[in-house]
Amino acid sequence: MSSRTQRVLVIEDDQTIADVIRLQLEQDGLTVEVAPDGAAGLEAAAREHPDMIVADLLTPRMHGYEVIRRIRASHGTCRIPILVLSAQAYAADQRKAMQMGADAFLSKPFELDELGQTVRRILDTMRVRFWGVRGSIATPGPETVRYGGNTPCVTVETGEHQLILDAGTGLRKLGLTLAAEARGKPLSLSMLITHTHWDHIQGFPFFVPAFVPGNHIEVHGPPSVDKPLEKVLRGQMDPEYFPVSLGDMAADIEVHEIRERNFTVGGFAITARYVNHPGVTMAYRIECDDRVVVYATDIEPYKAQLSDASDTDGRRAEFGRQRDADLIDLIRGADLYIADSQYSPDEYQRKRGWGHSCYLDAVELALQAEAKRIALFSHDPMHDDDMVDEKLRTCLEVVAEKGSDLQVIAAAEGRIVELVRDDA
Ligand SMILES: [Zn+2]
Image (cartoon, rainbow, N blue to C red; front, top):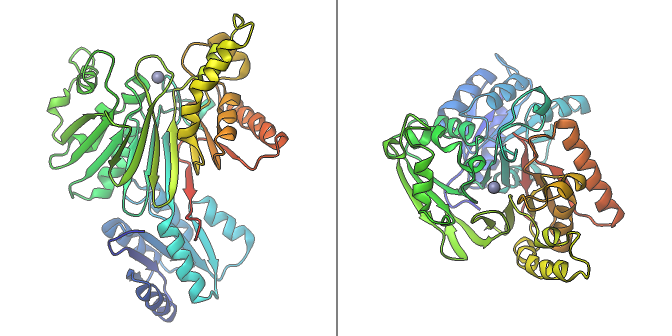
């Protein structure tokens, strides 16, 4: 729950309804601004950047569908949650509003208690947002348009805190959003890097907030094999590779090497573990407000790697199983496990020892760790959208056969996973 007063923008042309909503939300400890029509609401959203918007659908000057579309299309407002209140109770209208980016829909007339609870639930929801989901190399193009071609970047967001996971090419668009949301105010940002393979750091030179004086950016990651982490980040911006050096970025950038298993970053409690991947790579368990996200990309389970044809008596597989126990502990009970799922079983046979997982092994780990949800992540650059669909279908079948209630999704650029508090 947030400790600062949260601000709600209400877009409602009926003054009586607006007053009733304002009274209810102010009683709940929120600050409320009312805009009397859609166009004024859109302006207020951009100017004030409220914590959430409550919007009527049939508003003068600009209807609610257009308001939702334009709010979602603008870098400065695209992350603001929207609750639609409407007398339009048709299922098709509700579906349309949700497709266009509304977070929830309440039909008028509504109970004031229900409104208060819905607003509180939306404000208290933890959101995990995918900005890049592709492994190895960016793969833009018509064949990856649904799942996205940018390399890893994820944000974990609560009402009060946010944490950036990895700085792949997806970071560029996040940077545009953060800069627009800031509206000139200084930003204080926290970033966790799993390792420094290209696909996890290539977005950093294009991260707009790093060029803004007054911004503060903390980057945390594992020490590299034989160089300080800062030197590796600096290296990709050597003049041979990039026109601007890390030292020329105007923000105050602090690079921290992770030495502890447990630490706190940007309001999140972190548990870090080394994982099996070439070089030095970490996976993270991220906890805040009773919710747990595990970010474990670029991992090859030891058991899978050691269960090769030479393991005739199964001793190597057993050794691998013991080594994987630490990773299973890290994932244990997670609300969301973001999992390396790069290869199909056939591909894995050809790419054993390349440092990535077969998606069936990722699901197996999630089942053993009793995670609630797994997001298949780090899609192979050779996998088009249809192949990712197929990967998801196969994993869903495996989970259904086992009778588990593990939820499986395939991570897609722009997708948001909402983690609601158990008591909400
Ligand atoms: Zn890697």
